[in-house]
Length: 362
Ligand code: DP6
Image (cartoon, rainbow, N blue to C red; front, side, top):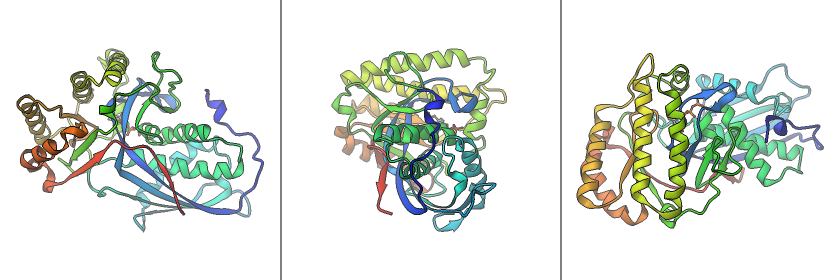
């Protein structure tokens, strides 16, 4: 697939108004996307678990304008209230995707969005938010061109979501999703994410992710700035090849259910991501003292309990604790007894692997 396949030709139908609602989940990368080229092309492939509880629900109401606007006409409500500070991001997104959805300026749009997780949780809502909005826009395109099939619908939604926020392209489908060209993964592409195409051992079908909210404040360095610092980074090339190798390693892990191998790749990826931040110029640290305390506790617990809890991190201080379904009771007990103390106001979110975005009744 190339860009051009997502450029529509003349639409067969016209649509005057409607409303659509999608719920799109967040995702947690096992092999991390960190570094990108022009047009949101990732510097390396990444792979993620789609989540279930952490999600954004977006309703899009659309009505055709008497004539095409010179700009985008949209109203934006976040949890029922006007959200002027989100507008520039949406405006930039619309500008990037307009050539792929040429009807955008033909409609007055009302975007009503809300997250299932607390607003100031330090959890990025851009992945689930951009995915939900991209799906709503694809719904309009499908009204205009009913010949669009399910596969193309999801692929283009992922393609559009990527242009809003890279990791958002992994929030359309579930449960294990890969984005970025990798020679061992057929149909993998830099342009959109695909469902992991090989058999996956049952231990990974019901994986859990408990998100420990270590620091709920605004990050000092945004992901976009962090990605850019990979240009000219002294370790960039080695890091990008390592991501390819780690995806190759995960293929064996997913096929066999090798949890030791899983832990090794996932924890190393998390620490490498943060090592890249610490060795950028300017350098920065997003982990907090409690992030490290939690990591140490997890290592201690794993060695004494013979369980398979492991951690991953996104671009922030929060810790994602990953574990298989069979270890749920022990993991919950350990989290309550030993880790909650390191969370801001004792807050954490119990999530698990999920199966992708859903169309809701308007
Ligand atoms: C550390 O997708 O938030 O979570 O494309 O600039 O919007 P933009 O970045 P974003 O980066 C996510 C980085 C990460 C790793 C990952 O999700 O793969």
